[in-house]
Image 1 (spheres, rainbow, N blue to C red):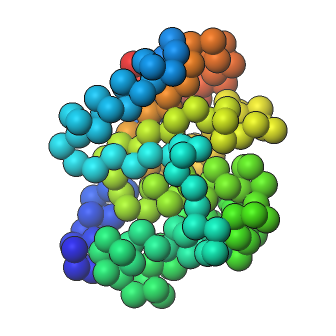
Image 2: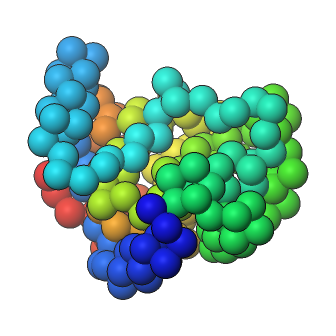
Length: 182
């Protein structure tokens, strides 16, 4: 993909309205089946934010995010880093740009993974089990605030979590007016 095509995709992406879909799973088998079905039915690429998708430990947060458009769109480092910086600024996490994975808090690591997924402008981002990614954070209000900050950069965001965590989201996301029941 050349730089102009990537720029056109990003421009189109930023004009799309943002939605959050909640997907409640009864158990790990149902979660894995859902993920496989999403991947199989996807007409375009789906980005995954998951405990199984680590950051590159030898790269900074900025470099982890910028790596995607460098690889997929053949952008120069400077252009890719500018896009990554814009996302970090929108999320409010510019201070973590130079940190590497071992030095990140759980929240910083989650933000880096989400921004790495978002920078490629996928039509769907799946956030798999946010509680595992944010063990020391009351994650529904954290997710609500973060996704609200990134509303101009995200498209369709699907949060995959277990049914027993549903009450944690009910108050936070009902107030956000972003959520679409799924």
